[in-house]
Length: 267
Length: 73
Image 1 (spheres, rainbow over the protein chains, first blue to last red):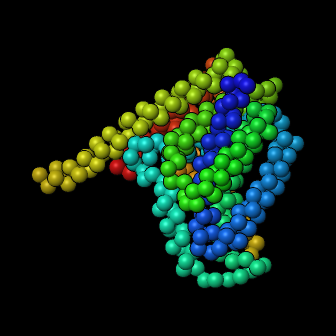
Image 2 (cartoon, rainbow over the protein chains, first blue to last red; image 1 turned 180 degrees about the horizontal axis):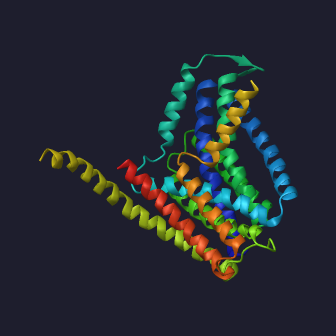
Image 3 (spheres, each protein chain N blue to C red; image 1 turned 90 degrees about the vertical axis):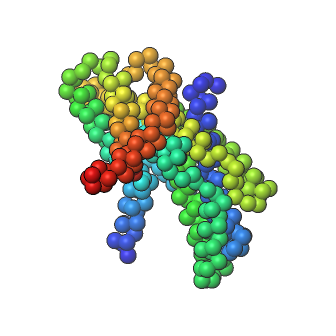
């Protein structure tokens, strides 16, 4: 397998793993408090809905968009999406944003579920079903988005889907064995790595897609072609490390300056 | 009912794509729009366009992070 193929597999596996861990926490909370029938029915229905969304969106994108427009559209979305992940990971690594805590999320969800009014619809507890459905669907739609964009651009949607599916199976098995939230997963490190990969491929494809505005509507070319990918990854990595080092110092200096301002005015 | 569903649909996609920091989406959109203008007008040599736009995206993200942190501070 080529480096790009490994990167595709790693990105979809890691991104999906993080999202499935977050969904698992809520499904577990619903299962424990509202019953496993509702929790599993909600999760299974969401998985089915996601399969339909993937098939429809994938078909629509491939059928209706020319190659450069596809590169620009999915590259731009991937870029924005990846930079959001990277931003959160950088701020968390820099200590400027609280780390995501699965144990805390589990406690909050079980507490909310215990106080919800019981209501049966279609033979299942409606609250447990809806919360499970929403969590799996919303976390899953991010996975679908990554699988479609990476898969289409790398022309290997099967491999991208396989990476996500393996992550799903691993998380479900780990959750079934542990029977508690997977709080020891290094979520921020995974999000940082995935953010870097999404930003790298997003930059590469979005810029290539700008060729749609050229006279011949051919994709823009990066010097060296695919060689630009590791260079872009290096640039994003360097920026993220620099930001993790610099931002706490800048925030600290700003706080000191703000704290000093009234004293200066008084003087 | 239709308005509520439409609002929910728009809010979902806004939160999904733009997320909790609109500056990133705005920065990417601005750089890509400027890049599109450069491509269309052929003001810059085509072989340097990709690295120039790529560098601008990296710089725009760095600027949005900096603004974010200074506001928090």
